[in-house]
Image (cartoon, rainbow, N blue to C red; front, side, top):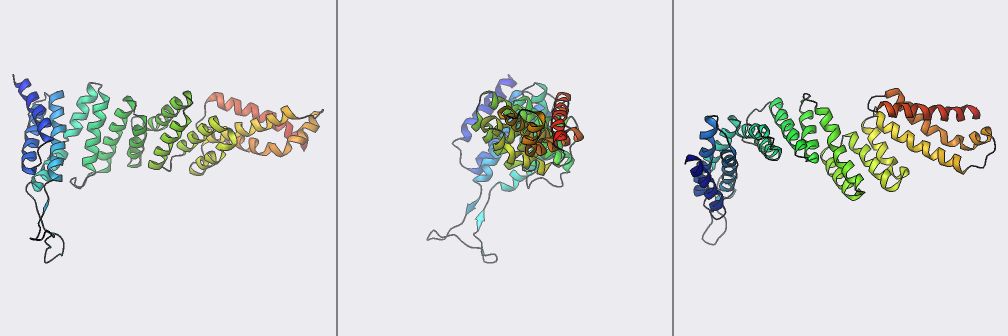
Length: 338
């Protein structure tokens, strides 16, 4: 019987919040909803209904706070001004109590607890929402002296839930934020590398280059220093328009990470293809004549492939072997010229 009563109460609160405009009434509804969560959480019996009550309480507190400030007016409708500050005068009813409610949610890790509950159920969508709410509270003016380690772990957990909810864009953004705050555990670098790849591969498979570019532009705006995003941008442009259109994006990637072997490898392969096209169209009869003809084209592919082989830090063994084979052939032509 208790279970159905709590469910009904939360349902009524959600319905009534749409029409209630009085901040004090909204605050009362928010408290009831929070109690529906807290009683079960305190007893270790958290369930979907209680977790929903927590979210409902937060939403109602937020609505109440938004309509709690009432500016005082003169008889002619103009705002009353404070004689000391010169600013408009206003009154509040429950703002102080709402701030205390937020502070309680932060101190008791309520949304972190809800996130763990949902993650345990493999409900990654709601887990990400709960962790995100916790992260927002930790970054709000209601949080006091939150260590970076606490916020970064919450952001990692949010990104983790995003990943398994296949929300790779937010996974990437939250993981990067977590790492910037010092979080290095639980394979965070693999998530940061793989999440954008998951997005772009899907778009490229569908030949949806506009979608790929839009997703990349959004992530690049959030994390402009990430070289991998620029490499992916170059790959998309290469698929869509050809290698030469992709060169500026590859260069942008290398300007952000001069030790990015994959970007060097891609540049080397692209320039090698230019050499191969010249060879295919050449009418030279001897190897020496051919080598002399293509000599001006050899510098770039040799430079970039050599750097990829030297670094060998984020390319596969197959790419490394391919780079070495291409280098051997290019160097043979280069030797004929000298």
